[in-house]
Image 1 (cartoon, protein in one colour):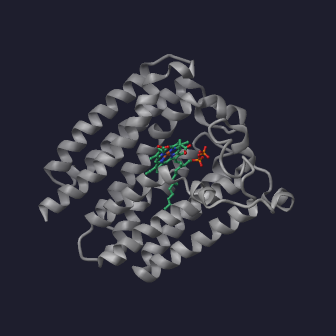
Image 2 (cartoon, rainbow, N blue to C red):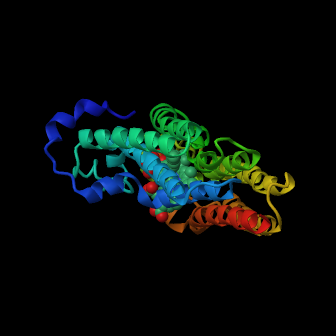
Amino acid sequence: MASLPFETTSTVSTIPAHWRDFVALTKPRVMTLVVFTGLCGLLAAPGHIHPVLAFTAILCIALGAGAAATLNQWYEADIDAKMKRTANRPLPAGRMDRQSALHFGVGLSFFSVLLIGVATNWLAAAVLAISILFYVFVYTIWLKPRTTQNIVIGGAAGAFPPVIGWAAVTGDVGALPIALFALTFFWTPPHFWALALFVKTDYAAANIPMLPVVSGEAATRRQIWFYTAIMAAAAMAPVLLRLTGLIYGVTALLGTALFVVFAFQVFRHRETDPARMAPERRLFKYSIFYLFLLFGAVVIDRWLLA
Ligand code: HEM
Ligand SMILES: CC(C)=CCC/C(C)=C/CC/C(C)=C/COP(=O)(O)OP(=O)(O)O
């Protein structure tokens, strides 16, 4: 369990934070895909939005996701200090004090939600607020330290951006953004657990009950396979519901077939040494390419059909 946030602030509050560390707190690399899914939700939506307002909406999704990532690291500084992968982040490395991170995260949260509300509509603002609150309170504070299903339920936060992008244009939520939410939601477990298999020792050292640590590697490989099957159905749903056409259909079919092959290789793999987990690394890397691919195909498909 993370220590109380105010425990360390008074002793280190004089650390001068560099702007690069504020950028690092927003997890910019993860954000690229979050922003891309939000952008695709916006571009796939029917109706018109002024390009400046569209840009503002996407900027707000980026800032909101960055705010959530910042608050996650503010809460988990002591946990991050125990993991090799995260020990060099601005807070555990001691390059920034927790109060600065807290102010930055809370400020950015309010700013992004208010700006998207003023620039587009209050439904988009409400969904952005829900995603931030979900990631910080439901995932980070409540579920992550308690259950192996933390990323399944908590992963919902990361599935909202296409809904936000769509709502920014239409002021509404339709069947396609719900299908894209489902795709991202069921994509998250194979995405994360593939990585968790080869960084298992990190999570064990930090006492986080991630699935491979608590239930073992075989159970994790089974669950990856199980969620991949549901994700495959979610990926084909837009085609079956006639929300998208041939371009998305063919891309989703081929892209998902490869995902299924890689997930099956992970399911069959019996390796316990993280250094020799090539199929797991491959599935993790491919999962990122896959989501870019399918979301891009949705937009191209809808534009060509329009
Ligand atoms: C609860 C849900 C999720 C968890 C626990 C999770 C966890 C992780 C972790 C631990 C990494 C390794 C890189 C790092 O240290 O930050 C990572 C990488 C990544 N994640 Fe996720 N992720 C989740 C959901 C998502 C979502 C929803 C997206 C985007 C839609 C996403 C996009 C990415 C990308 C693009 C990378 C690669 C970043 C890089 O190149 O360094 N993740 N994820
Ligand atoms: C619009 C909006 C608010 C979007 C949120 C997007 C979102 C929830 C992305 C999740 C991405 C991510 C890297 C989770 C890491 O989990 P972790 O923090 O447990 O990973 P760690 O072990 O690297 O700290």
